Length: 412
Image (tube, rainbow, N blue to C red; front, top):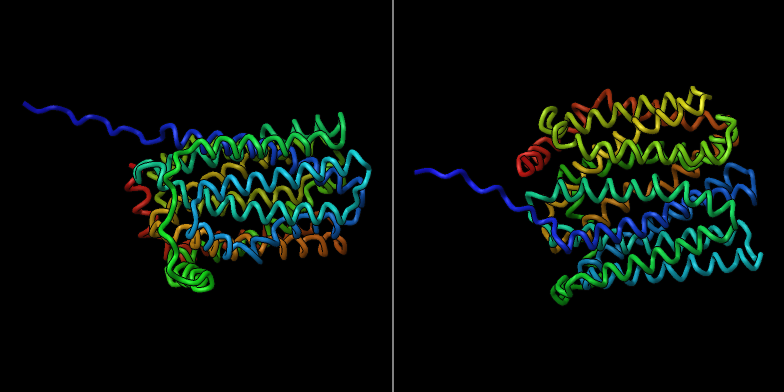
């Protein structure tokens, strides 16, 4: 007598839900901050280079400090590091809100705040990415990444931005003060995780750990390929989107509603990608799915460069968000599955040092280009650059084939 096998029980239980909830709470605050800060900056200056400087300051810690915070994440309790990062950001944003209330704010204060928040982000993200494989089974990792990515993007781009604009219109300081509260809430949720995510006491020097993490990332063909591809695309992508507040006013001739809708459109696409990523990956394969993402990015960036219609721009951001969601889910899962647990923090840090560390350079480049050739120019260059990668995707992404096949096989 044969019996059908019992369905595998999902491991996305209480611990995963705590992290998932923390992501939603803090990311909603981040979404408010993401729309309110450029609006505040645009109130203080209309210079594209100074506006782009906000993105430079926010991402500079990924270039300067990510490897150090990644090594720390492999040496200390990752849960406690996440809590500490949230509480630090609670203080920074709370002080910014208080400074606005006291009318003691200028563009340089925004730069300092953006940089300090970026420092906290490097520690929190490196620790969170490293802790996730300890919370779920390998077969659930792609689904866990998809849920986290969709929750984060939905919160930071779907819920947070319109709420941030509403609060900003009510009182300039409100979105920042509420963001501070969201960090405190996130810290409380992560603190509720079981105290079982400690690592073995380090026997090596911090500098040696940093070198080992970078060496592991660079010597692994799949990790090196995904890192350099993302770095190239990010340079041009953020050259354009770091100027989104000016794009909305100067090219789309719209106000805060359209500016907010662009964020919401991108979030909608990323959330939708969660429901199709497994089917697309099974049908096209891992490399085929990432190639599709590249084509989506290229075509949507070109469309954004040529349109002056707010409705078309928002619809284009929906499609752009689908590409983001597909890429993030597969790429994050692949990196987690091929990296030993003891190196996860440093691998993530090495990846982001290169792929996110390039962002401030791209944002500064976009500010210079827009100052001399107009707000369309960074979008044109971003579309052309991504199109070149998409055309050569078969060769560019070849080192990822085996690793991505393992990802889709485990998730099947």
